[in-house]
Every structure is written in C-alpha cells, then in structure tokens.
Length: 280
Ligand code: PAF
Image 1 (tube, rainbow, N blue to C red):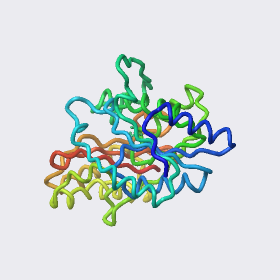
Image 2 (cartoon, rainbow, N blue to C red; image 1 turned 90 degrees about the horizontal axis):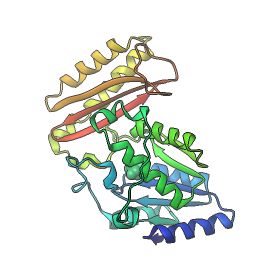
Image 3 (cartoon, rainbow, N blue to C red; image 1 turned 120 degrees about the vertical axis):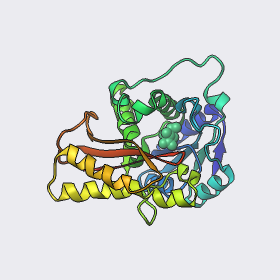
C-alpha cells in the first residue's frame, strides 16, 4: 500500500491511474477504523480497479466545543487494517497541507444542513462538504463510498455532487452494527462499561419504530412518542432529537412515506453524543 501525504502527490498518483484507464474507488474517513469503514473499502474493491482511502480528522467540521482534539486516532493500526484489505493508496495529509494559511473558500449546502444534525451542529456540514469536495479534487474518484450511519451527511454530499455537477458516483452503504445493535462508530470508544450497555437504546428505539411502521402505523407523532418512551427507560440517555423526515429533502413528515422516510435520532449517553437511523 502506497502512503501519500501531500495533496499534490496524491493528485499525480490519481491522474496516473486515470491515464491508465483505471476506475478509482474512494473511501473518505477520519480514521480509527472499524468494520463499518471496512465494509465501504470492501465494496469499493469489488466495484473498482483501485481503491484510495483517506484518513484526515477534519478540523473544519468540529465546532470549538466539540471533540476535535480528543477524537480517537491510531494511524498504525489503521494502516495495518487497510493493508490487509488490499487498499492501493492511503492518503494521509496534514492539516497545513489541506488548509494552508489564507484558506477561505467553503462549500455550503443550504437548506438540507439546517435541520437534524445541522440544528445542533450549525457549522458541521460546511466543514464536511468543503473537505469532501477537496478530497474529490485530490483523489479524482469515479465512485465514493459513504455509510448510511451519517444519513444526513450522505444526503448532503449527494446534493452537492448534483448541484455542482461533480463527476463522481456516490454509493451509500448499510449501517454496520455490533451484536446488540449499536451502530459502529469511532466515538463508541468514549463510552464506559455502563454507558456502552445503555447505548443500545438508540437501536431499540429504532426497532420499535420499525415494528410500528411494519405493523401499518404511519403517524409520525405516535412513532416518535413510542421511541421516546423506549429511550426513557435508560437513565443515562438524554434525547437531543427524534425526527421523521422525507429522505429527498429532509422536510419533516407527519406521516411515513413508503420508500422516502428517514427515522433518525441523536442521544447523549453521559458525555457522548450518538446518532443512528433507519430508512423506510
Ligand atoms: O464521515 C466521516 O468520517 C467524515 O465526515 C468525512 C466524510 C470523512 C469527512 O471528513
């Protein structure tokens, strides 16, 4: 596996692949890899001739009160995991290389970023969209892979790609879960023993929503109330939001729309804020 540290070198490597007629699959990550990331890598390997993975903890998507400094990092372990998966190139740039002095250009996807995560994290998606566009320009992928765990991120990136005519196919991949249903996330590392046990409440609430919807219940208020009742059984859990939205424009729904409904929630377990969702 080739490790490339500068954007300029990465662009040259990617351009060479393109000149050779190779299809490039790209998996952007912030590292501290888990099975969720590896599922994206495996799909990228299946679909493309070469796979580029980036590891970059992007300061732009963290607010000053968030966990940029303490975000888990373990580059040696990540490198080993990616080598085992047969990744061709790891792009691992520095903050200075990605955001040189005087950097002042940002991508803002307007309305989709004002709801859900955007309400609690108003500058987050500007940081995500900006870095993802930069990473696309640097790694020149034909396809890029994102997990559905960050549902709004996936929807925002798809809209940016459409609105800015970017020539890359966005592939959304299913959430990978622990045995008890907790969605895999690098931030799960923050949970202590008791918090880890109670973190299952997000999945349990979503399963309740699933049961109701599969049983024919469409009323969003009723579904949200029953999800809230599930979460309230867990004393360490504090709800940030439970929401039912149209997938296409993230508008809030009164009634579940078949094939176009995102049920999502954010819950604090102790100091750790977790998100999860299901698509119906
Ligand atoms: O999902 C993530 O890990 C990040 O938001 C991403 C897409 C790598 C951009 O920093």
